[in-house]
Length: 281
Image (cartoon, rainbow, N blue to C red; front, side, top):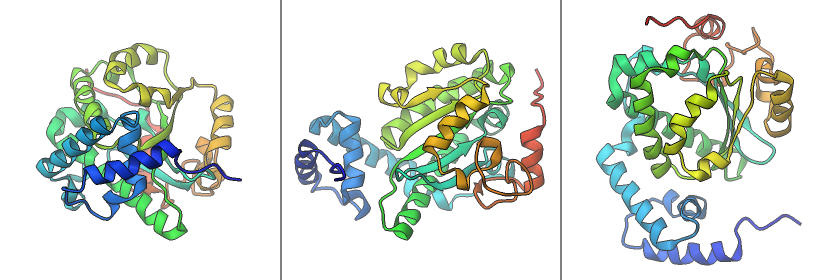
């Protein structure tokens, strides 16, 4: 017999939480249990704290114009600077994403476009993931509300890490994302972490919640070790061989596949994955 979706306490808190928010003009989606439970869990089922968190977020969305951000356009270079692969839904019902983070030029984009534009870009990226999950939910008739993520650090350079602008941007945006998109990630695995990763992580760790940190697992460059976990937790049939999957494509990254979103052309994606990162000092 399958375990209930919510505990008895959570069910009771959901009823009261919805009543406490009755003065707000919430959308049908925002009134769903799957949406409301995230705010409650993010605040350990404390009704007062969860209500404040959600009300603050609704205010932020209005001021930031987050509800229409998917309509905004960004320069092509920025729009394709951080390709992400959506690899379907795992057997446990989580949306699976791959981010070749080590190939992103975080230093370059924040210095060229500035933190304000980059923040809007990342909010749009988050909103696009939510839209994908909603579309998938409608298609398979099962709620898909959380993600499992792979952040591949291969190619990440020490110069990227030493970028003051990139570090300051992360410290600025991370708390905002956690405050406005709670409980979105179910599990995060960082793979191919470089030797200096612990130093880098110690700087940004204070700006991440304990709940997020508890969901993270870090792997070094032992591919067999992290691929074993990939095979256990991810839908490998929809993943490129490079990350332990069995999806077929023109190369190990399946750069021609429609799993890639916010991606440059296949040949440019392949070049991004294979070239060494060289950043001017």
